[in-house]
Image 1 (cartoon, protein in one colour):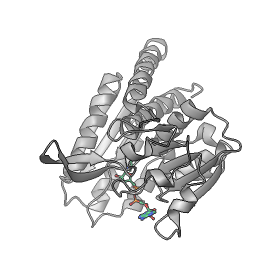
Image 2: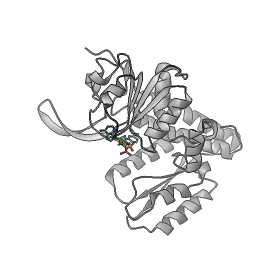
Image 3: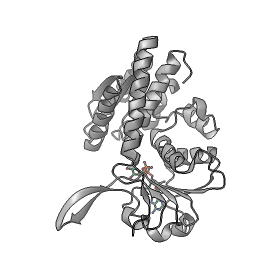
Image 4: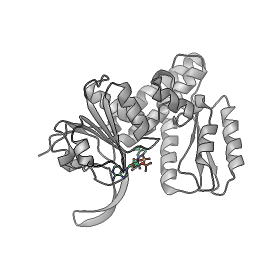
Length: 298
Ligand code: NAD
């Protein structure tokens, strides 16, 4: 018996993208400014190419100036840094994104930290991480995936999470840690769990909000879940599944959707949940950066 609501991230992302397009048109009409997003992709990683294509397509559909720099797998660190320096100084560009992962010979930290904090629409610069951690979310660029998760949580539970227990599974810098900061900022009582956590199902069982960002297919089961909990599934896993006698590769999350749906209050699906929201939040951050550069309140 299914009880949980299926949170439609795709529909919410489309709605948000529409309002971003409207605001973009108004920004051009009233202030002569078009948000500019530069995406840098290095090498041939097929998943990265799909992500970059989607980001470019969404940026263009929002009316942005969209630029893609495709660099060869063997590009040198100084050449990457030089490109970032040029983009930092290009007034037509308001957001810079370097698609991760990078080839092994490149220093990921030096590259992400070379992006000007005011154009760091991924929210990976230490200045933005510091602002988020210190609760200065009004002038920080918040990483896109947790920012999108937070909007979906707010839709279900409101913006004040006082008295709610939230359990984040995963402690990465791009999802788990910033997610915990946002939940804490919204007054939730937050527990961050990870690969060294003992008795994970027991810890998760106390949660009103579960955010799973691990990378292990269908890990969270119904018997981990408190009745009525809101579950946000960040995981993207490619697994073989047999459907109607046919075996093929499918995408699945970290949460066993059908199983937890018998207990939870609301769950995001994979695909169609967090993924589309992540891309839209990138557009929201870029628009905000363009507004700030034009001297407007974000
Ligand atoms: P990561 O590999 O950097 O971090 C994974 C985290 O999971 C680590 O903190 C680790 O301690 C924890 N972990 C590993 N095994 C565990 C276990 N058995 N029990 C509890 N915790 C465990 O990954 P990430 O970059 O945070 O991404 C996590 C997942 O989210 C991946 O599947 C990734 O593809 C997906 N993702 C999706 C989006 C999106 O837009 N939908 C964005 C980013 C990441």
